[in-house]
Image (cartoon, rainbow, N blue to C red; front, side):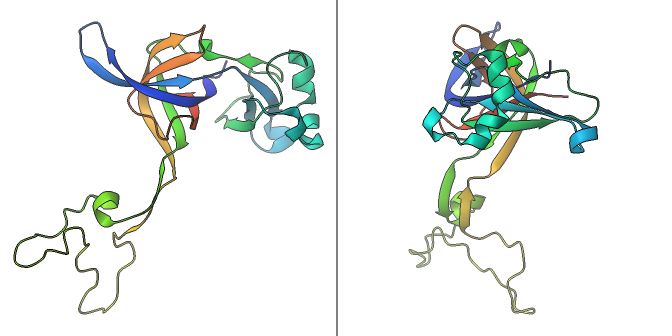
Length: 216
């Protein structure tokens, strides 16, 4: 079974290991996902597994989506809590055919304590920010009459070319980007509550949609 599951970010905590060291960690809620489609090189040009995640009100699902998930829904049963998926995500496979089949249910048990994983999510959107917050500029001195320029970027041009070079660090939109954090470790798995504890920080706010994948 491919080590891949979808979930949402919950909150950060302190985790103490057997030596008493404090490790920053993040709780992720990982409800079971369902395999909704298998893609192969012969039919689709590449190998991938598509997963359905979350729950949506049935009246908000169109006929195309219902038809797409018909096989998976029949296998897991219409009375199941799973189904009427809120979102879908594909996992591309580098080589070989997928081992999963349509209708397979993937839960938190695919991971064990000690697994190395990578987590991808959309970071917090911060809108337009200045150079101090966006790039870590120190700003100007307050002495010698510069009482209004503590957070200004300073000179941005050049005398000779008389233009601003491409790539100059300036103020602008910050956040809202897809971030992938690698080399994180699974510290705990709660099968009853469908939660997983991962070392380090995960992009996004509480409730952010995350992808958890085992490092190759």
